Image 1: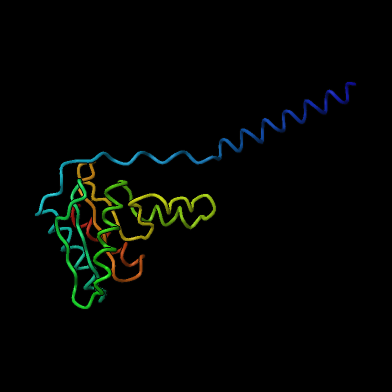
Image 2 (image 1 turned 90 degrees about the vertical axis):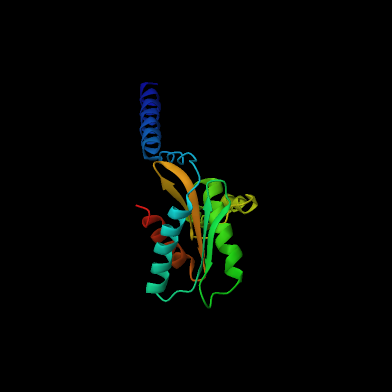
Length: 168
């Protein structure tokens, strides 16, 4: 009887240790996105656009760049020479997704890449799961978003980051 009791106690200790290790390794939830702020000004949108355009030209990438305000409304849109017109809607969708959900569209791309239950993301209205859309944060608040389309999604993301960086 004592041996059986000892084995049960040992098993319980092992389970507690394994459970505490698993809980300790569980990732903490991401911080909440920053709150919305006043809409991006035309001057700020122009500076953002100039940064994005410079990055695209430096790499000889023809793209569409769209800047939306914090309400999801267009402030600026630019289609570089030679860019397919289909990228106009894609750039706008990326920017809209970034402002509507206050996070980069790359987040949705990464979630979708997990497959399985993550595929339900495809039913999330307005979520574009393709890199190239970024919220524009100023003073700790989301004031707008940029969306880029025309090259690979990673290159679109690089141009969008140049837009955001131009304001810092």
